[in-house]
Image 1 (cartoon, rainbow, N blue to C red):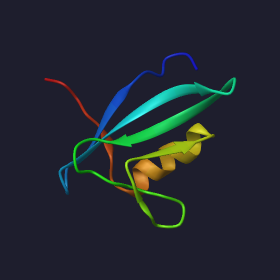
Image 2 (image 1 turned 30 degrees about the horizontal axis):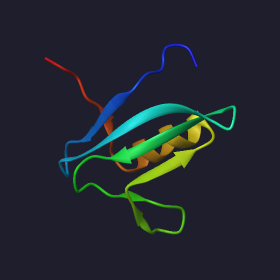
Image 3 (image 1 turned 120 degrees about the horizontal axis):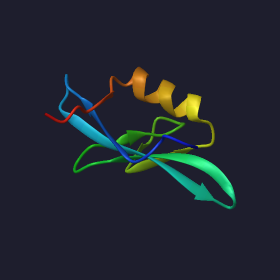
Length: 75
């Protein structure tokens, strides 16, 4: 997991924001998407949650793209 660090992702259309973090859980690399403030993350069965864990990086990236989140650029 070289080159991946904590990232803030923004959905500019809705104004929502999430953190996208790599985490080691039970000896395995997982990726956590955590809502910031009142932002909810949609779970597997469409339930509203504050965070969601993905075991594969590609799944997490697809989720973020599907929901319109982009990496925030600092100026």
